[in-house]
Structure formats: C-alpha cells, structure tokens
Length: 91
Image 1 (cartoon, one colour):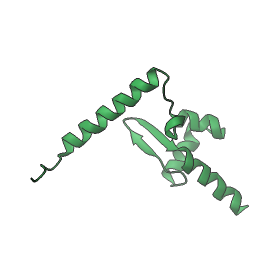
Image 2 (cartoon, one colour):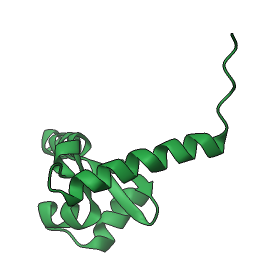
Image 3 (cartoon, helix red, strand yellow):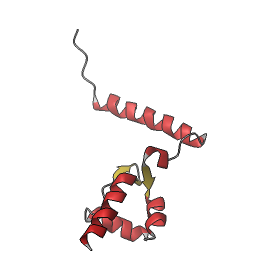
Image 4 (cartoon, helix red, strand yellow):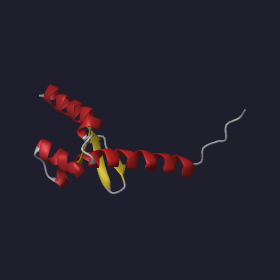
C-alpha cells in the first residue's frame, strides 16, 4: 500500500508537537537545553564572555553554525567546541 506523501503543513505540525513536548520537559526540569547538546545566544555569550553583537557577527560570517527557531538562535555545543579547537590549532 502506498503511503500518502507528507505535506509541509503536516511536517511543521509534527515539529511543533515535538518542540511542545520538549518545552514541557524543560518546564518540569526533567531536561535542560544542555542535555540536548544545545545552548541559546544568551548562554553562548555567557560561556564565551562575548557580546550579543559578537555572537551575531559569528553567525553572519559563518564562524559558528546555528539554527534559528522562531526569533531565537541555538548552537550545538559540539560546534562550539570544534570552533574553539580550530582557533587554538591556528595559534
């Protein structure tokens, strides 16, 4: 039997449901963003002791990979580590 193709709306709805479930777990303190291996711009700035403008420049010039969900930017902790290791290797 052929499966009906998934529409963009169905795909977005599935993503929305998954994000809602993650938000619920975060509210219950069962799961943190760090547990997911992701931090937002606020935490990135605190971690690296940089300004939000510097974080924006890093996004714009491709220094650091990111994902934008809504109006917020998220960064994989592994990508941050790789960026730092690459910077130290150049020195």
